[in-house]
Length: 265
Image (cartoon, rainbow, N blue to C red; front, top):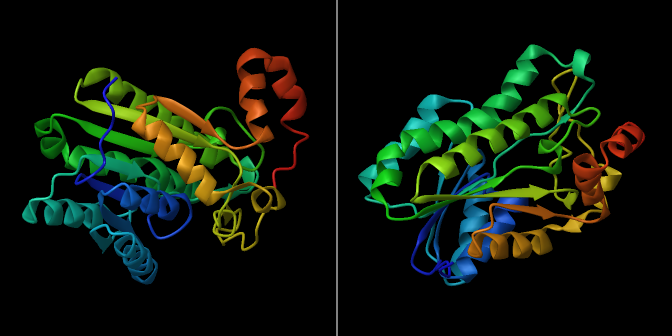
């Protein structure tokens, strides 16, 4: 397997203003890639872009809303107009959930699917011509351990992450020039639980204890960039919580026994 070269290549990061997206943007910058950051908050994107530049990389940013097709259209048009050839995609943007399945409104279900699944899928399809014209394109997708099995208070989140696996594994199998790495983090110390959506549609607003005690996000990014450089198809990242993935695969009875007992916060 040829070594992946990041230097002088362009990486597009969705959800690049914080969390895993931010940490991986710095990893790409350190390896000499040009970084294009996207997300909803320009102040966060500008801060991350400045740090990427301090690491010696060229960095730009564009604010987008993955729930709005016209926002993604504008990003795609800008990339084409600037003559930018994206060699690496990091599809990281996402929102989580903290609510029981039947208490969750259908609007919330749709929102999570739009942000976590359809937004990235639409972006990739919008850039179809660019991708097919390139000898090699690598798409790294941030899924979740919740994308491997169901978990309490995460029904819509789990569904959106499950969908990523089906779509991007199929894409990888169909096109010789496209390689996909599904990054599957467990509990990583980010702010994602604070912005998770409750049954009322409001932000959860606090850090889960499990999240607070999770793997450092920079360590997560170091593991992720190695998996991308080795062209791994899938990489689990985290601590002892990853045992649940193995229980689900090899000892399904144990998964059913434990899943409902593990704190969902």
